[in-house]
Length: 359
Ligand code: 2P0
Image (tube, rainbow, N blue to C red; front, side):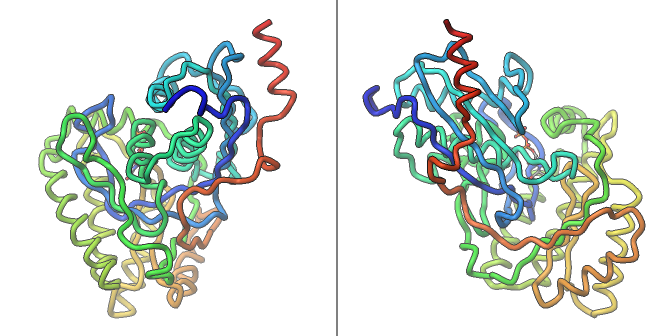
């Protein structure tokens, strides 16, 4: 890729969505490249919760600049700097040292507890690759997005997605791949119960590192999750909801068990989360089969995976639970899409401030 191909000073804008993992990623075997100990399986969510990210590269910028939800971010250190490694990888591929201006916005309130690095990083990788004129395959893009945030590699594709753990030290076989597209089992839903707006006490990145370092139970987690990933993929392909639901619930509890086994312990669930678990268990018992599955990420919010025909019953079961502030019913969605230049989030005001900073 040569320098002439860089789409200098034009902004490229992508929109994409978070994903909810059916079988979770929790623990890296390589911190820098973000290589996981086990494969994970997820469902990409529909655009009613989305991230829009605009990217522009220019030789005229003095430094890389990032705005999230209109606030300029400090990217000189910490996790923000680490996540920026993906921009450096893309610059190397494009043979340029032009600096990047990135403006990203979530259409869901950050305080809702749904903020996810996955949609932010996936749209960033997608828009930045476009802005640099790189023609990357979905596999290549997922490998790039992975370096910003593990779960982001799964948001490069729509429908049900597997992130293969891979085995090679260079990470070239640790990528995301679509299992089935969003139309294959269209009836799948994620009923989200927002139960907490507290900011996480421990970030996922720090938490999983601590688990790998201290949890004895974690020694067997990768084998268990790898097995669950295979079962979940098989259940999705066969549209076997009962089997999928049991795997989702078992894997969520397995991950939260290793979090609790971490020293000092990490607890993301609260009493409302536990009430949701019991309510879903009672619903399945009353129905005589699994009609819903709970799953929790690094937070207390409940994601209830169900089918459209049972979604109302799930909402009824959640209705009486004190402490749920909001319920959203989400469908599956596709991977990131490129939006027209009229949707760019890069304003003249931001550009002027950067050009002035240089002169
Ligand atoms: C997942 N989570 O599979 C799991 C379930 C949280 C619990 O992926 O360090 O933000 O950037 O790779 O991707 C959250 O971790 O962490 C996550 P990094 P990421 O969805």
